[in-house]
Image (spheres, rainbow, N blue to C red):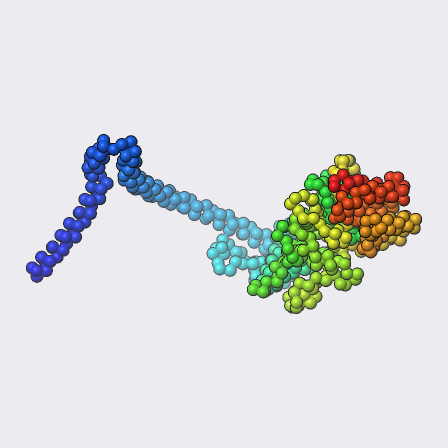
Length: 566
């Protein structure tokens, strides 16, 4: 035993000796050794040159900074611990105060529920609707309107009073209840039931449908009632009333000429392009027009990254088994469920190449039959797909117009002839002067009636044969001198545009002037104007000779601007 004690004593003594040695070394390093450090510093410092002295001072300062930094960290940690301890003490009092306030809130809710139960039970009887107090807040399943009313109905209320309660819950208008509070409670319950049912349906659609947005559109229009439409309005009144509406309701001002071109452009094409400098109302024009029709337009901001159809129509995700829907697709689908004209605005449409992301829609709109205006979304039909999708295909409605806005600067792409040929371009380079007018309300017009007005204008305002002959002469002149021609598409647009332009209050010659300038002469911008500059002067003289001096002012001004620009 003595040998073991000797062994333990020697071992523990060695451990203690080493610990003391370590502590002593640390104290010598950080505290007591500074006298020796300073003596060494002074011994060598006097022998150094200037560079050596600077280096010695820097090295000694770094040695001093180490223990100072350690002490600062320890002091900082100590202060933080003290502060946390004080905060913990004060937090306990704060938690007690919060608990007291929560108890008061529960008491108030308990009192409010008692009053509500008294109001509902005022219809008679003692076993109609059970009281649910504040203790229900701790239950796993909160009571709902349905199970509370159901429990009351099965509790055996008297026959007359039970009939009255049933009448309230079922919305039977033939039975009247006494007291405004009972009526308010019943109305609140009915509203809550409807809202809960709608939320449940929306949640079910979002979870079980690969087209959740389109299915929610179906839900929105399930019980939708169309307004009373005005089928007596004329095109000229249509233009004047929209101008008054924009002025009085939205503080936006447009000239009658711009509105005529916009409405006539709708008759000639499903795609309109609004061009001009910033701030002239390119986006606000279709937006205010759609507000005038009480069907706000969908604004789609085109991004420079748009490359193909998926940017506007979306795509089917094979991994999630859902279709990534876009606002553009939702607007196209919703337009098919409405009777009034709808608009989709492609804001800054030439930030990306239009012929890339919009190519499929441009091709579909060229189909002669509306039955062929079909977009393929998915290859097969699923049972839960939206009702307006047939075999995974969506039809572009005839009541939908696409409005593009475009700026011509270094940040945008040039819109190609392929796009311009299919569209009606409208330039907005000037702001209209403000004016005063009487307040004017919205109108409700069906798209079918608007198309009827367009067709009626084509019958009532047939283009004059003499004017057509002059147009054909100009066509032959352009073919001979510049290899330009009035294509079949432009001829068709002219026959659609000019009569509606006249019906909106314009002139026949003014409508032709606009089409020639924006649809035919615009092709000069894609030509090498320096080779035909002299010929353009002769073209201006020919136009004034054929149509009379000042007959086509817009076309002449356009040619002069191209000459000066190039």
